[in-house]
Image 1 (cartoon, rainbow, N blue to C red):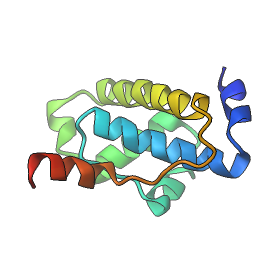
Image 2: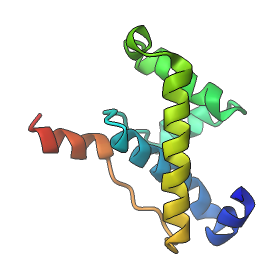
Image 3: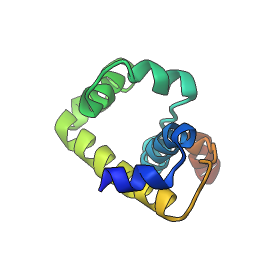
Image 4: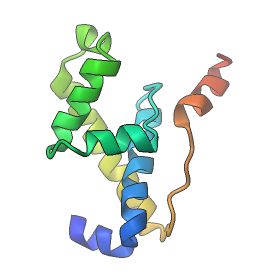
Length: 111
């Protein structure tokens, strides 16, 4: 399934689609996170997607690990990201838009 999705998204745009899907997933889950290009590419050094998310949580969002199980959060992020990615690519998006969902969320609550 992932191969058919990637075929619909040009190679350069595939990375942008994944980054946009992560940020959309964070927003949808109510997480005030935003991965910029630098953060996303630094995490790509790790092979496993779960390890990337866990590393980010441990280094930037460690307070969440006191309230939530890491596997629970990772599963929620991966599931939501996969759905967002599929929606973006099946919609014929050629270039992922860069939206800072964390800023968007702050504006919604007046922060």
